[in-house]
Image (cartoon, rainbow, N blue to C red; front, side):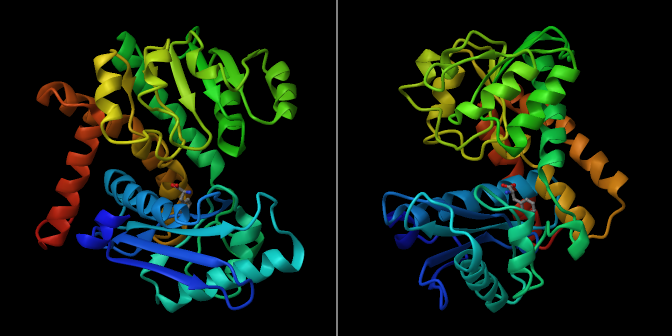
Length: 355
Ligand code: PHE
């Protein structure tokens, strides 16, 4: 945070006190070089009072890379609402905070477009939409593209094909073992799709109720504390970020890590630790792009859904390009992804080719 203040990394960072809720709403626009910043609205509790701002900074910067690599004409931004307690507010209190978010977004005049993220969903987008039009993924009945998680999951499957090909030399998912960490909206769908593709599964979730889904899928259940060390071909992080650290990387017993959780590395240097251990890491900014690709395609660019689906499947080609550059330049896939994204943002900023 201090570094971001001394040498500003973001175009705009704003903390507004919600008029109705009294809660702090943080909006961060990292870059709008490619177009209006797009990124979800996270509504969670943070034990540390400075953490929401730091999180908004990191998440919005990741959205710049995600959107650039996905070929979208959108920059990166994020909204974060810090809840005072871990309980999800409901009813009037929830509507109040969502209206506060909507007002804050509207005040930016279209420089930032929001969508769902951890702790928010299509119904919440409809309420935000009562205060601003700069919102994606409202339910279809309200004119939006609805739940983005099926599209994110589709993109993850495409990515996993490229990952398996890079790690094992052939793209087939059948017979491979995957360890899915987190069976939320996206993780549960990914687990189902993997099962349908003939893969073998180990799964975990902090909610014990997810054991029901594990049984239904014929998956092995791992305790949340042990899942990182499960002996699988590919580990699929589908919950909160920050799980790959200097402490956890030595515990891994997989050939590759690839999943939709945002910000999986605790710090950039952890990408080197993964490479040193011979673990292939697929940058989360590439793997997780399906939701934002579909929502912005259908709602902001008015593409037919088939075109958006093609773009989501294109995540596999983008990931192959990242792996190719990493191999050619002897850098990590993380560094390769950053390089490709920076190239596109720089080109747009200097007003040259606009792909
Ligand atoms: N939460 C999504 C992400 O991290 C962001 C999103 C924005 C999704 C807009 C849909 C629409 O990529």
